[in-house]
Image 1 (tube, one colour):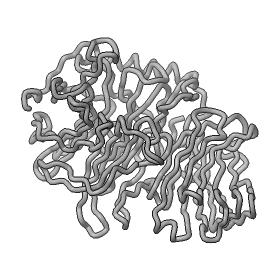
Image 2 (cartoon, rainbow, N blue to C red):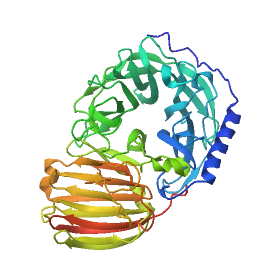
Image 3 (spheres, rainbow, N blue to C red):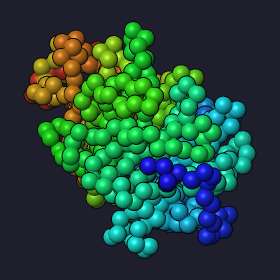
Image 4 (cartoon, rainbow, N blue to C red):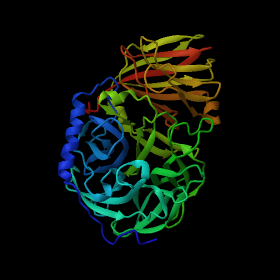
Length: 518
């Protein structure tokens, strides 16, 4: 299959890009002017107005961190995709940048879909993304028509870019509509690209391409096919090497699996983002050595993208509001990203994703509660009104008898709260939203290993923002990310024990600074 990779990019303008960008900026500004901030994040990335989804184009370039994201600038539900943009020198103080991409070429007339950024051998940056059209020309009833595109920035600040056009067409006889989200890296002397594909027989695959010049690409092979025949598409693929504790190189393949069926605690979300660890040799297929594992066990996590800076593999995910009701849709904005996390391999050989060290710089002040003991069915208020905080807590499991114990966050006077707890009956950490008055409910549960349970201790870092919670278990061995739409009034945090006692060795509460995007 070589006839769908042109010798040079195919550029087919149909609209004035500058005019489209100006319209998009006006659309975001109109919604931002009316935005309700009751759940708008203080220290997570979100658009000023409108809908966002996948993180895109993540990079550190010329002294600045850049986060792009899928943006619909004309509404708070998914629509024609643009690329929003924020940047920072330190990952703590962010500023809004001009919208980078709006649909302006024939191949992307219905959306500038997800993609990545890569720095070449000369230190210059290049964008790769998917151009999206509806196959029937007007809506999704006829499926997708998607191709891969490239663009070059106009300046070192990445405030604008010039589209170069299509570099990989879609062999429609080999593909069932889905064909998107390019990831590019270099191994040896060769550049490689992979993206997600739904094959003609509706199997979720990642295809592998190679290039010497980053412009002319050649099809190599299927890099990976998901073994589950229910999985028909692997969105937002990721692929990178990582060293284990003995210095051996492994490869991590990541993707957001569409079509997987719920099974026990697994795959509870509409679509589920996860990874496998294995090996890969250039030109070959990925050989998994583990089963599919979730990046994040929460209600709202999807489409993660990682990038490597000075040996650190850093990842952002999208907190995906897939299930109605989605009350922030009424507030002029919808969707936020997670905190940035660093990916490492733990001593047990599994992935660990902990907040990057820079996040400690968001701490404004610290209240040290020391050790706390709650008697049978005990409760203690940790904070009367906590809008944006981080809590570090170590539970002495061996000295606690409670069936469930933990933190009720966003606890309001109407009795609503979200519960972050250790459940001793199932040996898992749960985020339970059954008592919330707003939004989708349900609970999610993250497993602990036998070794973690046997240790008798449980470390939790709980990041509470105005409308969300992220729970990092034992240094990021597991994570849960969920929206939590607090009711009106003060938002207390309570430490509670159910049907037994609780011993907490230490508990610190940090008030968090704004990242400057409010």
